[in-house]
Picture 1 (cartoon, rainbow, N blue to C red):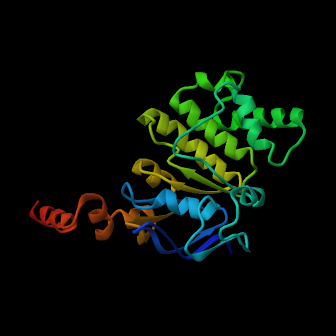
Picture 2: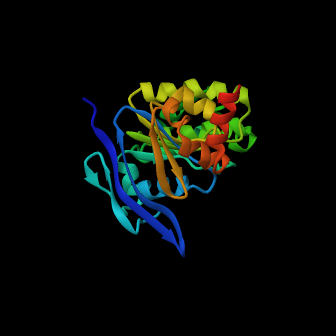
Picture 3: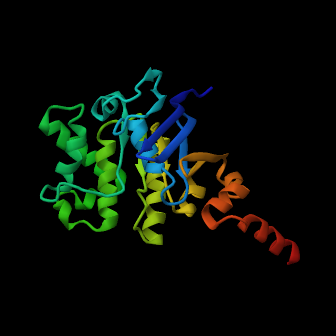
Length: 251
């Protein structure tokens, strides 16, 4: 029986008068590949920041692998096995792909030679082996996304949080990235992703949570949540679900 790797209970965060995240609870099972979706401004990235320690919650708790990590610094959470990527990819442009990946490896490996060697193995895993000695500045957007993923993998995570790792990619690049993410999960790493590309969510996720205006409004399989009236209206506006049903009945 699988166990929760990440448990979030009644987490809230307010910025000024804006309730960015409101009483959110969820449980991520070890070995799963799950997703957090929702309209722009729903609070998804804020929730990731609360999970990983970049922001402290006003209330609620976060437990990782059985340990209370509420408000704990990100570097301490990383040492426990929690790694994340960011929407805006910012590699060390003057360094090579190998050197960038080694930055992540150095979290647990002091020896420079060993770190660079492990970086090569990770580059192979994410499809960057043929570009490993290039400066990061020479990579395409798709290449930089893979590099961001590789640097996080270098940290040897138990849980990998991917914040829109497919954003800005064309359909072919998205199709090429999906098996990479699946293989990461198959290797034993739990993957939790924020994503707007529904093709990817449907292909990847075992379980989906939907956030709207800081609140969870639905959860379940991708097939179930995409048929939920509250989800349809969060994305397309109030009354849309009823109009779509009426249109379907008239057809």
